[in-house]
Length: 240
Image 1 (cartoon, rainbow, N blue to C red):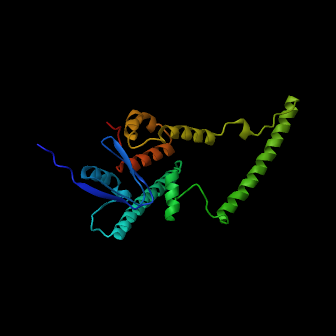
Image 2: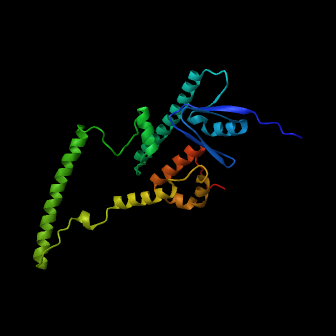
Image 3: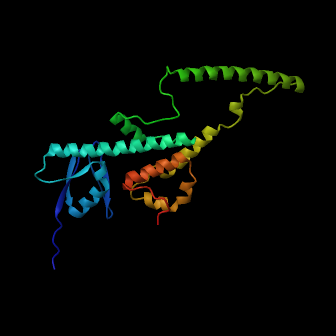
């Protein structure tokens, strides 16, 4: 019995981003502005994964300009949703008094492209804001007070010990907890930054406990990347 040849389908990408796909061990890229004709099974698989990011099906009699607008609307909606989710996450972190999450480079890029704001509760945006001026004045006064106290303490210690006191600033003598935290985040980031749709799920399964023990910033980046690669919610339990 001769198997009938599978019908073909046209897939178009009219977004600014290339789409990297994988199907039954075969990988490829649909470039920005490109249309590709492929087997229906593969096309449907790719559309199921990337339609939300602007990939669309084309018919021979379609109005190409209409389809371009449809593709771009999907792309804009997708990234607006990602930015909104990030902002909501950071608002929640701020209300709970937890450490904020930093946006990924791609999220920063898309926010700039779309003219949207990434909420940053740790930053005061307006340089002429009254609160900022008050904080600056308070910081100057605090430094002066600390400097005077440090001098007095050093003089007392010098009299007691009869020798020169080490006046090395405490900030130089004591490790900075913030720097230690950033170093940990950076070290963790190297573990997953190069993961792809082909390797992400397996890595997460093998490193589930490691992921759970990472700082919130790392976990947020991992969850965001997982959802971008697979277009599905991040699992609440270890993948099987």
